[in-house]
Length: 163
Length: 128
Image (cartoon, rainbow over all chains, first blue to last red; front, top):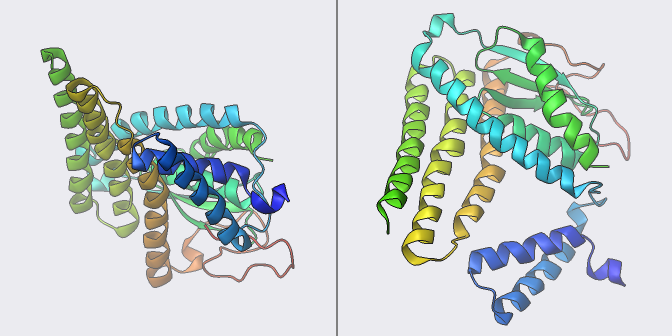
């Protein structure tokens, strides 16, 4: 019964909080409507989520967000320098293949999004069996280092966070 | 509102504007589509981020409320920006690149844009 009503408890909480932020109030009225949305939307979209994305370590997600925020700032400055001061002919764009240890589609989606959000790398495609990502680098002298950094900084933390 | 708060707010807005400008300049300067895709990711992260932090700080100091709409804008941007970049690059690849132009995958299956997923009932890889 509880499972039927809350197929995705985390999604329910997220949707309620999102509604409260959007409505910008914490009155009983908004909380009730937020809860209503948080219950109805997961039930309505349940067919799209065949298995529950299992979060193992929520604290790791917080650490992950901090690391990503920091990297976004650092990488932005770096890419701004490349765009402003590096002549196009000196740029060495490269395709790299990032082999994945992650298996859950949700975790891979988060990783792919993170790679795109940190400037300098864009996720372009996934392999047909979901075992590696194709990433385009704006400029790199050492493609292996890019792969190692993605695996070490992001994937390692996501492996701990998702089951 | 104190002068320090005003300097702080102007500072983050100007920084955000600068990154937006550099991102737009990158769109003109960079020579090919795959490299141009990199430019907007800068504008959506630090560029918009600077403006949003400025907005939050302003509302905090000027009206004493902790504005949360900016966090929502950040959330929605972070959800949508990678999808857009992914779609643009996939469209470009389908249009102008052959699979032989790309590096090999690390398994025996090719890239999803050029190959069908392996046929298994439960293990369907998800296209992001």
